[in-house]
Image (cartoon, rainbow, N blue to C red; front, top):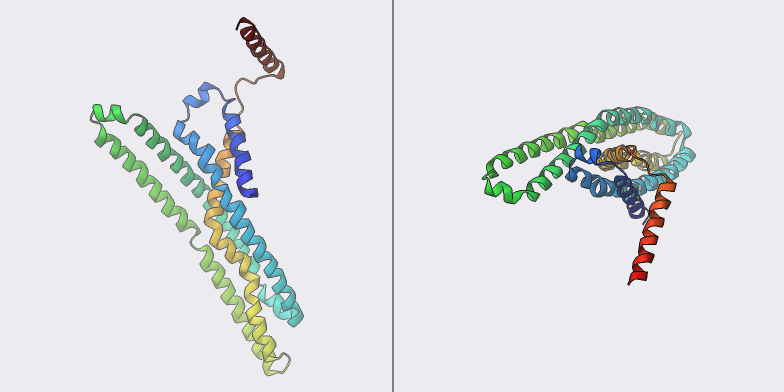
Length: 263
């Protein structure tokens, strides 16, 4: 409910802002791209708000619970298990910085191809009469190829994220087993506690795995939000003052009153 209501409010805000922009701005932007701003870009935020955030919060709660249990078993081993986490976070941030502009360009390509399709469909009769189907087909194919290449490149940029997290988790497991085996041989830790520690250790990395699975939705949502804010940050060339609006509303009311009187 929160996600869909947020998308609705943002959609209404964008549409209201579009009504205040000048004709010169519309001359520089295609109608299909504007439509994608209002509808598609706002709806891309719903999976981020509903699924990604919910999964991340749930994983964080489980991770905190696992951390408490592991600290009761062995604080030293817990700190050892968390040792690769800063490296994993650093990798996540670096990949995010590189992937952010890539996803922004992908969403921009999607808007361009949507605008191209809308222009061709609206003028399909003229295209058929002038026998321009081959030319428009080649133009659309070029835009479609550019979009496909951008989509493949975007996924290539984020593809190292999940393997990197798994590598960090494997390194953590190796370090913990190495130390735990020595402690178990020295009778400083019970074998049952050793097994429990390894099982609960996986919960520490659960939030990172959730982010890895949802990084595509998150990056697409961030790119769509950037496009939305670009529109909302556009200042109308002519601002309507409250006095002018009240004057217009007063004139409309007067016209309605005189029209009803004549009737």
